[in-house]
Length: 352
Ligand code: NAD
Image (cartoon, rainbow, N blue to C red; front, side, top):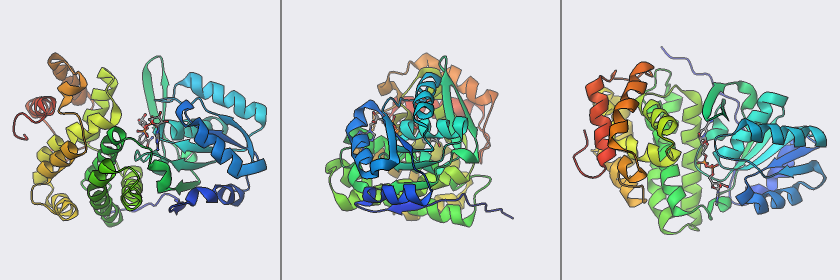
């Protein structure tokens, strides 16, 4: 038996789709939206503000990684001063995270324009960071009301971001294929998402302005993000959450390094997921293909290349064992140590 419960999802996808943002804002009946971005993407926020005309009440370009509560408070003040009735977030997971926080705190609906492959726009998961501690939760109110994907906006995403970010998206699909709440619809999205991203990422890294490859990668990221939004993640996400939270590691790179090792551990126990990934990647050896994809798109070679000290691995294993996520094979301490050791070493030993 399964239950499939679709999240409401409106997607406008295509080259030049950015020109549709005003229509999307009108569709929601919004008249005074606050445009959100990071400082680095301020020029893009200005472009959107121009496209929105009088529908734009103002801009807040202070979005930051991990959605600090101080940033949310500052953006909230701007939103209240301007009498904003909605948000338009343009950027990656950090900017979309800020829009979600404003939806949570003020009930503001959002239109979002993703410019990375992180996938947050497809989930009801919000996150907030205070005093170095990240709290997350799920609430339908934070789900964007409309998502505008324009591949042109990703041409400037550097190879060092595109590769790991794409593998991070693939990780959502891999775990969705064996999730306890997976369904045939989710599996179809996951297989297609992995196929698209695996085909596109090497091309995107070779030539960032390859329009067809950028479009395929963004389509894959959408599908993988939707898998994340629809299911409960397993050991891979738990491990990456523990590693990232305890050792302050870069999010996407950590996922990209750990994924082949967890795939090697889990896939023998879930033949249907393994078969779907073999089809998607066109190979017999899924963990090996994930690792060679990571190598080809410039993912750092092992957790040690991210500066992780070997003695920290035991603490991470403790954290995972203390509050495990559901996983096809419940890992023992020895399993976790083996997976972490292999992920730390990188290309040294064979996959465990
Ligand atoms: P990010 O949003 O932090 O962006 C990284 C940097 O790249 C920023 O400076 C940004 O301005 C810049 N950038 C973004 N797009 C660009 C482009 N096209 N060209 C040039 N520069 C660009 O990074 P991210 O990986 O998108 O998001 C990571 C965050 O999202 C993490 O905090 C993660 O926890 C969160 N996340 C949340 C969910 C969820 O469901 N809530 C899902 C996935 C990720």
